[in-house]
Structure formats: structure tokens, C-alpha cells
Length: 109
Length: 113
Image (tube, rainbow over the protein chains, first blue to last red):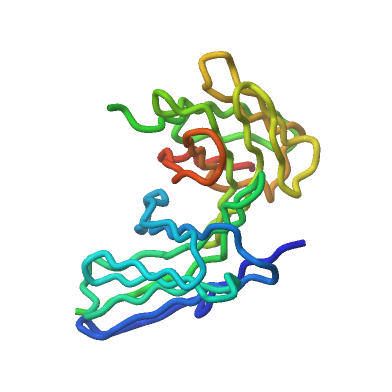
């Protein structure tokens, strides 16, 4: 079956450094959604990408959808301590949602 | 506007018992999703209900079941509980189809002893 893989599993950064998490699928993605889950919290929707090659920005966050729609990335510029948490990508096409395992971000002040 | 609510917050059961978890979606949302999140792990898709019908289920045994009521609230039942069922169970709701953003509830922490 389809697999959605995220790398890295963990990332430790110093505050102010950049961070990138990658999402790769074994099959073509329909739509990709990104969620953030703070420690002890529940996932919160960040953004959805639909079109091949699409790039969207939210302040310090940049989201990209690969040209072949088989991968996506989330880049955070100049991380802050408020960015800590786990970032999940999800393929939301079809009749089920398949989440990646997530990338847990640790930010040291 | 109220968000997705789930009850109970915590549930402690013993092996072999049954657990019932409840979820109320955001008003206007017809789709409800259930996920299992084992400690420190990702979200595993369990079930998707829309308009009272089960639309799809993930790779879980039949002892995981549920239903959606006419008011779109939903119930997840887990029969013959096993130790490895201990996890956070998250419910999410959305407008119809999974192509819309999902709004998650706070979850029910199920502990099986």
C-alpha cells in the first residue's frame, strides 16, 4: 500500500537556525496537507498544497509541492522556541488520510 | 464557535474489556475521522465516517468499530482490549471529503492494563 515517509525523524536546532522536513510518497500524492502538533497537544492544520510545483509561504514557513507530486517539504527560516513540536504531512486524496510519521523539532534557546 | 470535542479525556480499562470513545464534530462538518496515536508515534488512520456512513477504514482488526449518528457525532468502540491498544485516540472533523482541512479534538487517552 501507499507509504508516506518523512525525514528526518528528529531535528535539534539552535534558535535562529533554519529547519527543513521532507515528505516522500511511494505513489503520486493527491493533495498534501501539513499539520503541527505541539507537545501534549493535538495536530493543527497549517496548509494544503494541491498543484504540482506549488509553493506557499506563511511568515517564516515555506511549503513546496514537488513537480511530480511525489514529495513535499516544509522549511522554517530562523527557528524560534515557539516552533517546537512535531510536523506531519498527510496525503488527503481518495477516501483515507495517510499521515507521515512526523518530524519532531527541538529548538534550543 | 466550539471546536471538536471528545470524551472522556482519559479512560482506563483492563485487557478483554470494551472501550467506547465519543466525538462531537464542529457544527456544519459532516465528516468525522478517527486516528490512533501510540506514544511518540505518528497518526494511524482508523475510520472515516460521512453522512452516517463508514467511508473507509484503516488496517485495524474488526474489533475496532464505530458509527456516526444523525447529528454527525461519532462513537469509536474497541472490543476485547489488548495492551497494545493503549494510545491517544484522536477524532477530527471536516467538511465533506478528506480534501478539506481536518480539525482535531484534544483526544482520549486510553490506557489498557
